[in-house]
Image (cartoon, rainbow, N blue to C red; front, side, top):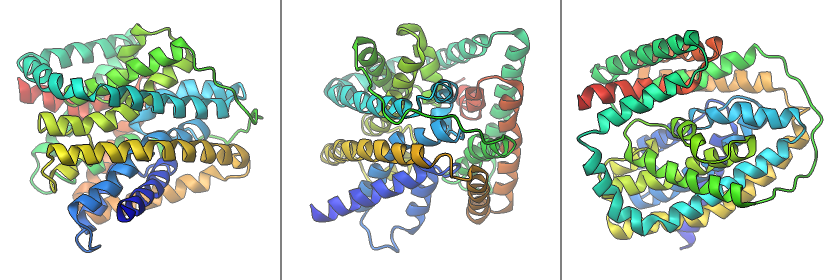
Length: 398
């Protein structure tokens, strides 16, 4: 138990680092750990405990950059405008609290629904398997037509198609391992592109309220509940991201900045749970961490219970860290040189891409970065870049 506690705390520390550092993703750290864990003298279960704790902590902390720096990851890409709207109103710490509480509510409902999920997820998945390609097509069409003008819709189609073609090429090449190819793709689409864009922005400081009281009312809880269901959808629908499901769910709750942040944070954390439920029930993991752990562990019922226990034990620690670091970020946001932070993150990520995937991975990352800048420049949702997974998936099912 002491060993597990130490590993959970190590995972929490890693989750903080991945969460608050622009461009450094939890999947990248898990991949590095996967390569090194035998040399570290860890068993597969010990390694899994640390990585799961990291993944859960990451789902809380990765909203900090989205609020204070404006360099989000794909999972939190939708939160940029709502969070920044609250920052402009001087309510940055309220946004921190809302996303933290939303994650906890999503975790509660996701955990409470696990007994039903173990029974229904495989049935729903195999029932939908014959028509899932049409579900994906309808979802993509909805996201494209949600853009407000025909010009933006055309850009959305273009970005989705280009990203899909890039994914199709990447998944059919034989030079880079399939375990590694997603790293340069997602690093370019959602990491390096946002860092480059942030380097062009001027740092501005808006006075912020030091304290915030969050009223957890009916709409708050409803948004968290729907977010938990959204995490289950991400676990069932192949290639769909939390951001895309978050957009679709806006039709089912009272739309506001506050409720939107609750729903997206709940999806984010619920997805961390259901990625392992999917691995156990349908043998098809829906996250990078679950995919990597699925290669070294045969996930049986007892191991699943251990993983869920780790998740529930980690969550309160992650919430406390999220609130504490959010307050620290609030205090020092005026003093931090975000430009230097972004430059350092950019250099680290580029080095890791080249070190892990070589010249061809570096080339994929450059291509993905150029493509990742297109949604920013054209003002369309960045979720269309998920065509890198969705279009190859549609082609596969067809």
